[in-house]
Length: 114
Length: 116
Image 1 (cartoon, each protein chain N blue to C red):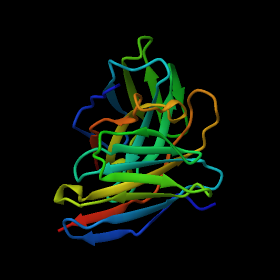
Image 2 (image 1 turned 45 degrees about the horizontal axis):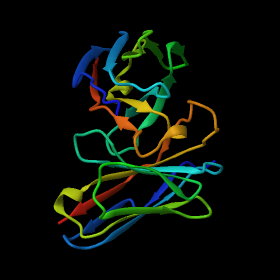
Image 3 (image 1 turned 120 degrees about the horizontal axis):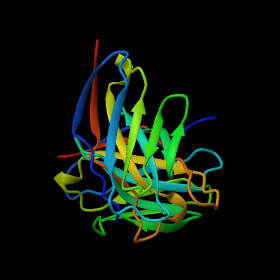
């Protein structure tokens, strides 16, 4: 069971780059790493997903070292609207079974200040 | 296209009662997962259903049950409600491509259950 660990909170300022790291020491071979963003009273929203190395999309980058025991979500030039909770998720719905549950981390509360 | 829909949006029950929550996945998605999110914590996995069969179950008591219908919608049932069952219940759907990885989950807005 791949448990994840993230910082509880982070503060940043508008325009800065924010890096949030997630530890997942027991990640399984078939597991992917997915990051979600959640605003209060809303369901989580997919940000990015990766298996190894680096993945980039229009909103974020995801860095995964060769041992895959951690990952770093990078948000370039954050704005006030990026204030939210960010979750690291390890698993893969395609291979989910009784011994491979999808596990959210505790989440990182990002506060972006003006 | 409509996203994942859940009903009801809010629900108030008393201890010992039973509750049924409903979820309709995105059209074409055959996998539905249920999560419980207690205030201030991350979502906790309850069930995953795919093609009407249970594919995974989290660490929840047997009071929690679910099913998936031929149209891939799903219901989550909770019996003998406890105060600790008060939470936001989230449903997520995904398209299972049959290959490894990249099966993004799309979450609904959730049902806020309050047990008094």
